[in-house]
Image 1 (tube, helix red, strand yellow):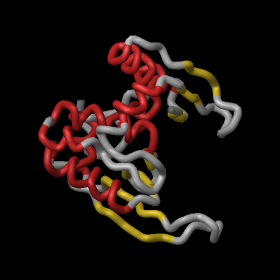
Image 2 (spheres, helix red, strand yellow):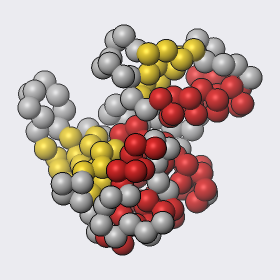
Image 3 (cartoon, one colour):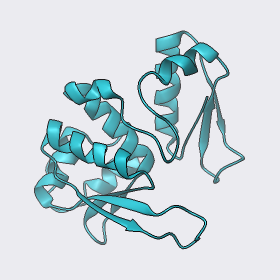
Image 4 (cartoon, helix red, strand yellow):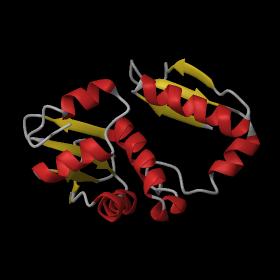
Amino acid sequence: MRFFTNEKILAEIFQKSVEEAYGSVPYLSASSQHNRGCFEIRTKRKEIFEDLVRYGKFGTHDWTPPSEIFDDKEAAGEWIKAFFDGEAHVNLKHCRIQVKSVNNKGISLVRDLLIRHFNVHAKLYGSYLQLNENYAPYYQLEIIWKEDLAKYINEIGFYSREKQLKASELPGWRS
């Protein structure tokens, strides 16, 4: 099993969570296969992989949030926070938080979780063609309204200090 992220704090949280849940510390390293500044967490323990796949699908085109979090606000908040830490962009120029994905079903389920547990409304746009025609079309989820940005930042937020600070510059945010 391999997990990649550009956020070191997210890599460390994932590593610690795997250790607490399975009693095994996965290997954490700066990835040489992906972009500079990317971290890779990996383990070869089959039982960890077999347990994790019970919670949902993985892969760029097939991932879904774990079904267990649809009835658990706290778990949903933690999952969304980790997901947005790895995938979201805080766009100060256009005053929004954006997430791109080639997985329409997965990103639609994230939008559903935001509404269901936090009453955060997000617009889903797409599909858009990629510049490289060999890549799949993508969808974009955007939190754009002041009230929803404030709810997201205050109730969910980011693990990444840099993203949290940047998000606090968006209009409507109140701590």
